[in-house]
Image 1 (cartoon, rainbow, N blue to C red):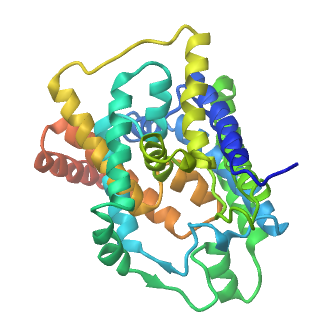
Image 2 (tube, helix red, strand yellow):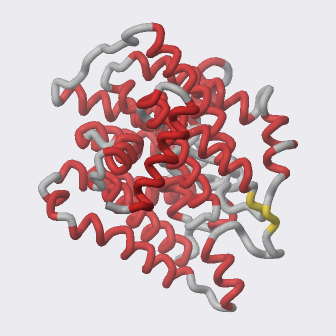
Length: 368
């Protein structure tokens, strides 16, 4: 097969994204919805599904690394220094924006495919804010400010747990670490009988996990290192949305990549699922207040996603599949930001939201 054209990776992204969008729409799976279920309703089923997806992603990705197919150090998730401040702040902003919008970037693409015009506006603003932070007017603040606050790692050590712990232990423990993580993440979903009665949820989790592995494979095997050298990548929906928006407006050639293909694929897959289930509905903003909330959330998600290096899929699953050090920091920031956003929507102001979170924490510590 001639892989000299980068459009092969774009086609692979279209296929992987399409399958993911189709299955996720049918399962009504959403990262923010899963967090909200767990935080407010104490229902952990959808969180267990994402844990299942992460477990499968880790299993496949670490197997590729052990086989020498994927070099984690060539990806953007395991640098030589960890910009921890930017990652934490970015995760916090992304989580807060996600709560204001009601879903993440991936979920916005799924909603767009089902006819939600609010998501079209959100994605345009989100992509513009992300590009401004990536390469535009805010890039100087990101590069010269936040990213300078970084934790330098020992020479020859990348920012992932297997590399760091292997250096301390003096042995390569990647296989053992991956196996333990996979068991801890997959078993809760497999042991929950309610999830076995929800095959669409389980299927969506499996597809997301395997989709991450497929992304690594596609951007490793379908890339001509001499004609078009690029870093391996997989599912993530922050910088790809920004670059897709730029490509549609200015440079068609920039669409020839896995990320842009996956952006179109998710929306098309959700569209196909919505049409098949008669779930396609045109929707718009109810009032100016809802529109303002979505626009603010889109800006926060765009800026925060670039700062922390990905979205709930890009950091939560893709970086997590590499056991990158950025993964727990970004996810922790997103969880705190989402919790603050939920409290803000329920209480009506930041001050009341923070007070409500503190009171809830005190009640939790006091026990029944």
